[in-house]
Amino acid sequence: MNVADARVIGTRNAIRKSFLELLRNKTVNRITVREICEMSRINRSTFYKHYRDIPDVLEKIEEEILSRLTENLKPTLPRMESYLDMVMTEMKARGDIYLILASENADPDFPAKIFWCCYRAVYPQFERKFPYLTDAQRDMVYRFLAQGSGGILSGWIRDGMQEPKEKVIDLLLRLNGGAVSLLQ
Figure: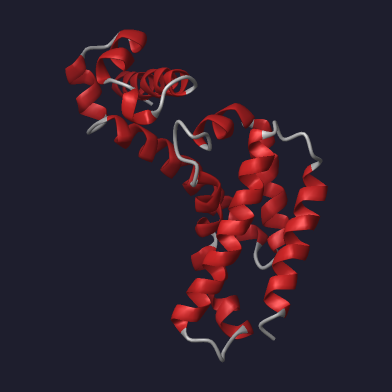
């Protein structure tokens, strides 16, 4: 890595760190570029070299996390239990960032987005399991499962991830399995 690359990475990390710190106490729409620049010790033009605006910072952070989770998903398929274990282990390890991102200040739908990460990967299995459903109906079923599971993960995150992940995974699998069994 050359010096220019290291500076770019350092600048982006400083912006993200400042943004996440501000997000602890403010909603994303109340954070200003000026505040981030002051905390990061950069000027506005430097900020705009890296991001379009404040929502872009949030979007890029989420994309990075979701991309990492998607990459880690590939070896675990077709076992949803393995994926949930991997996701929840990652959440525990980096709990603070997940707590911030799933808060009302940022994106309360972030945990549901985690489940949408695996949608494309599991869709072929979903299609085989429910050949009698239309694509739209399969999409609705998956949306139902993802939103419900995302809600459980949101609660788990907001409660400080106190409940053992194994118990949460078991509950998610039983609830989703029960819902899916109603379709068969």
